Picture 1: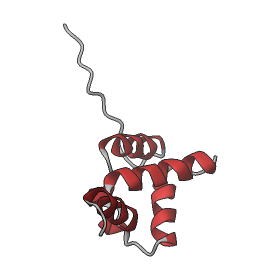
Picture 2: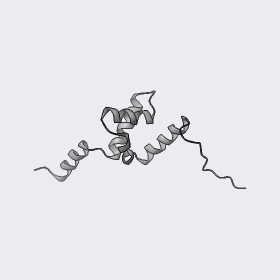
Picture 3: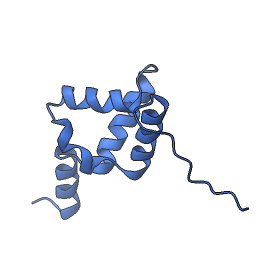
Picture 4: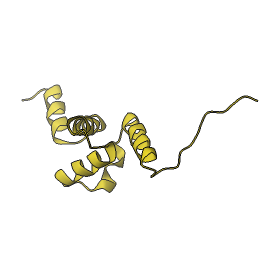
Length: 87
């Protein structure tokens, strides 16, 4: 019989979690110099037959920030300034 830690490892390897998904996306971006985070997520979903609508829960906060940065640089999102000047 397998221990609880072995069972957890097996389950974690078979199912996507935020950490695993984020690591996979980071690896794709690192290995493919011209690929941004948006393209990496689309590519990962295509390769693994996952609908893009289903990955929103798998996107970690740091990955979400990188996506926002990509989207802003590509003019998909409006640039916002959260800094306030004291007058």
